[in-house]
Image 1 (spheres, rainbow over the protein chains, first blue to last red):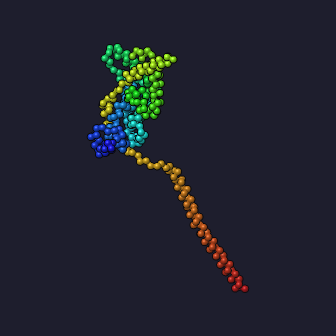
Image 2: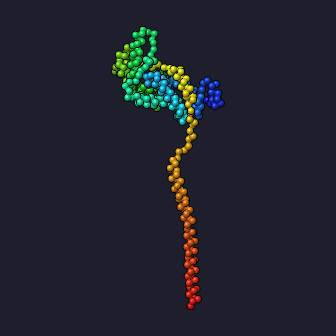
Image 3: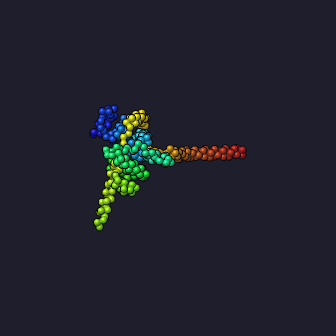
Length: 203
Length: 113
């Protein structure tokens, strides 16, 4: 009922008056070509997609470029969107995942991906030396993560940046919750082995 | 016996440490507000395609072949049905003409005798 009213208000061009409406309502309008509704979805998801792309590429420049491409592809294909019971975010993350895979393929001949701007490192209130050490270790860890298979990177980013549950990650990755849990465990063990016992105790 | 739980606990502790390390490493980043605004503006000016009308897909070639075969068969049957009475009529006419000729020739023979 509420959804119906919201849809009606959107249809009558009073979208601006509606402060809170569900993804489903906005999506239904966006599928019909309502750009305002698409804009609402964009504002809701641009940060999440940007975060995801940023941690998969390692720099802001490519994150901006690829995020824009994700939304351009989404707006081109939104009219053909088919509701399969998955959240819209799953669709957007899959677009992002595919574009990033292409991006990595295109850049595979290049020697190294640039890790710019300290990758969101922070000033700790502790001593500068401690901050520096921690940032170095984080940079090392991020570098290791970037060498993991793409699906493992995807899993870690969705879990630690987006704070999605295993079930939600499963929806994005097209896997069962159990398969995600198993992959997560294997990924942690693999990272631990790569990082070495001493690093963990250091931090 | 007592070694297994201890080893399990140790493993869980190490994995917990890894989780903490990852949680402190992955921090949300914010895109530049100017970028977000500019992309929003560009997207709002992007021509959105209208929803496609879904029609059942029938290959044109296949449909043409089927229609051609049906049409050809119908024409053939119709042609045969027209030709049969026509041939029968022509045959009748031909035999009538032959009979008349025979009658005429026998009549002439009688008159000459």
